[in-house]
Image (cartoon, rainbow, N blue to C red; front, side, top):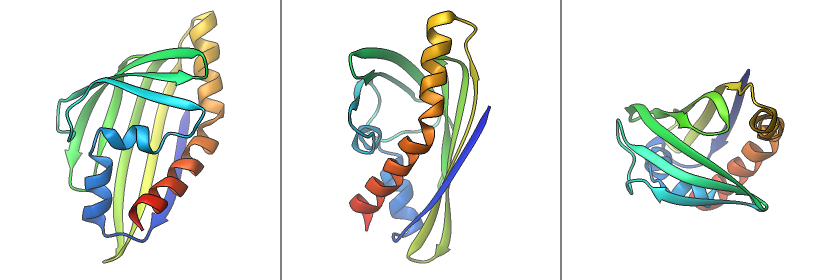
Length: 145
């Protein structure tokens, strides 16, 4: 499965990248009623770092561990090493449109787990990605513009 979301924010590329490279940004742009509880993550994400967190979907805890890869000034990849999907690769990219406008591109490739419960949880999460990323775009603009 593949999902792509793009949006523009009135902020320089360096500011957008700096914001998204902060581990705390994930919780800041997650829509309610979902809650992110970080267990392990450096303040600033770098190549090879691990983020361990629980994504609370209402009363349902979804444990997740991701490895940070392919870090550059214009993006990074978070790859699930433990979580609800059989595979999950999320590429975060930032493209300067002008000196003060940046396009944020999220590209996700995922495979559902062949498990009755986690396959269903993963499918539910996958189907809500458009809503999740619409909120993330709105919240990112609110925080950076």
